Image (cartoon, rainbow, N blue to C red):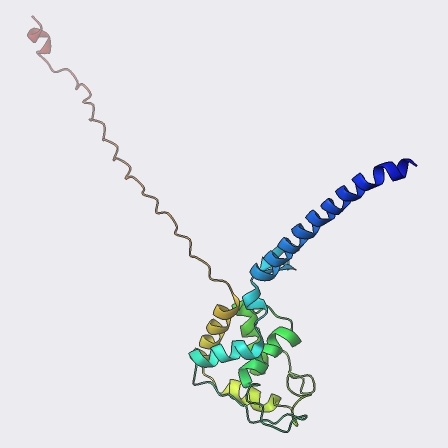
Length: 211
C-alpha cells in the first residue's frame, strides 16, 4: 500500500535522473571521439591522444610521406591474392609504418624508435622475419627483400628526412621554450689600499728640530 502511494513520484525522479546521466554520457563520449582518445603512457600516466594522429591509417600516412619526399621508391607492383589486381595503395612506406607500429609496437612519435626500425632494415639490429612481414599474407610473395633493398639504397640524409617527416605526422607540434637570458652585473674592482709609510729611523740632529 505504501509502495503504491509513493511509486509515481519516485519513478518520475528516477527517469529524470537517468536522462541526466544519459545526456552526460553522450556529451562525454562526443568529446572523447571528437577531440582525442585515452591511453596509458609508458610511465603509467593517463593521457589523451589526438585522434587525427592515432586513427591515421599507414596508407594515409605513407601518402603524406610520398608527397613530401617524392624520391622514395613506392614498390607497389604487387598483386593481391584475392582480386589479382595490382595493389597500388600498399607501398614501401605503408609497410614500413606497419612493421614499425603494428609488428614491433614502437612509438610513431619518437625519432629514436624510427631509427631503431631503420637499423632493422639496415641489418644492424633485429632481423626481419619474412613470414610475418606486412604484406606476406595478402600478396603472392613477401615484399620484405625488395623493401629492405630499397631502404638500404637511401643515404644518411634521406633516412633522416624520412624520420623527420614521420615524426611530424604522428607527433604533436611542440613549442620551443624560450630560455630567459640572465644578465650578470660586473663585479666592481676592489680598490687597492694606500700603502702605509712606516717611520724611518731617527737621524742625528732631529732632536734639535723639535726645539
